Image (cartoon, rainbow, N blue to C red; front, side, top):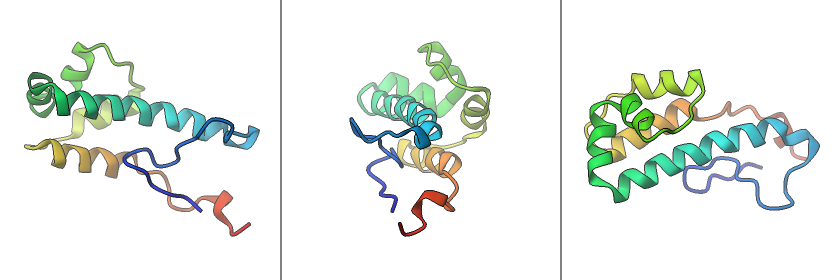
Length: 105
């Protein structure tokens, strides 16, 4: 069963990864970057304002490496508060709720 902790939807703890979780490793990297961006926005008011004004430009100015899909998501977000921004970001990156590995085994 999946458990959501903070923004990281499938956190892999040390020793938790298996060969069947390669896609989770890739997804975890995206969530790490997203968590870092949101964390920075909570402690850096200037970055937060920039993130809300122009999300893609703000993350690129801080030289975060994003996939083309992530760039499109950041470019599409329009929010006036960090909470609203976070909600939109999580909604767009929420993984498919049909996880074959959660079949009750």
